[in-house]
Image (cartoon, rainbow, N blue to C red):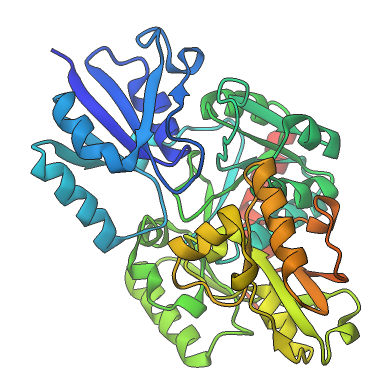
Length: 445
């Protein structure tokens, strides 16, 4: 008899684990996925086009709150936990729920889930959402391109639309993003790469993504999501640590595993974190992984026309996932407001509507900053309404994508941006020297 399995996920790692380990295995039956973190995923179907010949009717996706009912009704033997940025304590709470229903609880490791590429892979991962993966990835890509290499970025999945249509996506222009109907979260990750002339792949079936992406690359850069492990086996594994959340490198899954696996750890935000916390994180990293090279880096914030901030009452719009399940209370926008003399950060919570108001109810740690929510057109309208109803002199847009192009902000607005700036040596270029050498050698074969 087949072993009956439920995969707990958030529309990313769960689908990858299924595709890699279970799709063509007749000894198991995946009876359902459960969904959390990402809105509008539950109640859908993992489509037959992706599920394979063993699942001609696809696989249902149910809300995580129904886990116990599914386990009992379907007589499930095993639950695979397959999403990221969850505290170790919370993981064991999930395990306890599963064990109480009689099933096994499983975490799948790199040997079972990482795919091998034919070209060198540099993976950029983190210990928490919002640690600085994106800016570190951009720095990696810049160094590789300056060495004359053809670089393609593969982004961790964000399949919020039609899963079958999103199986393998290639983005080379803003038109590609428009045609795909990308959300704010997708735009935040893709647009900075496209602006630099770098092709980005993403999707649902990462074996298919790999086959296409490596065909046009000399080096692949894995641009990680949340604090998940890479889907492709890296030749160089970089992990970003955030001293503003010192101790989280030991307290979150799979962030701690990332640190233990890393070839190099980037301690970011040393310009805004307390020196004692930077030092404690460095000690912690050395204890967890003594072989890892440590790079220290700042995350300098730049603002258009910063003089306009002085004395102004500002509304700060920050990267949504960093604030919500990333657990941060502020981001680059607050740093910019403080540095340039804003008289007040205006609290948008009394003016929040719809899904924005729901985010404040769900994530109680959020303070007087506005998380950019935009999975669907309706959420964009609710974000726009919240911004325009908030009585501020100025809006600071501290999201990786320029919201001014997507919604009508009636208050004067300035863009806040940030990049990685390594301090001393070793730096990212030092770390990439073996990868560059290997790629250039492969070119001459």
